[in-house]
Length: 150
Image 1 (tube, rainbow, N blue to C red):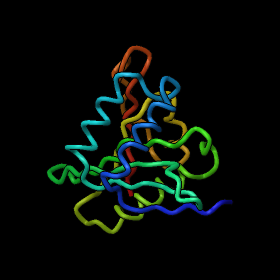
Image 2 (cartoon, one colour):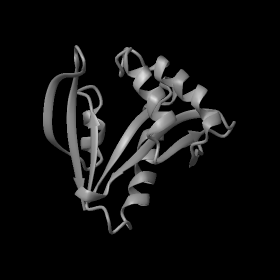
Image 3 (cartoon, helix red, strand yellow):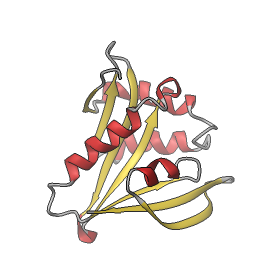
Image 4 (cartoon, rainbow, N blue to C red):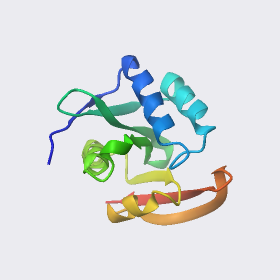
């Protein structure tokens, strides 16, 4: 398995992240979601991480947002470069964020909001489906809300 480095997001990473969402559209994201991600990166990032390969090339990213009143954290905006999908990058990034969250006594539930295209990945990693909303993200892109409790 190749070595990956996970570090905190910096604004200099934004162009590479926006490129990755375009590479994953329309396979995993609706075209209109790029504008939502752009806004998120500028205004809603709480904890966001990037994954770099051995050549220091951006190959993945994903974040955490917190909802303290609900003792909830949400895994957000996971994107893996298409050439790196299925190679353990997403699993490693998800595990990194779970490791960040597990010691946090303010959080007792971790949520991810994904689509029917990716929910099996989260299910395999211990998340359980709690809700489906048809065409939530865009036509043909359903919302799958999944929870991880520990």
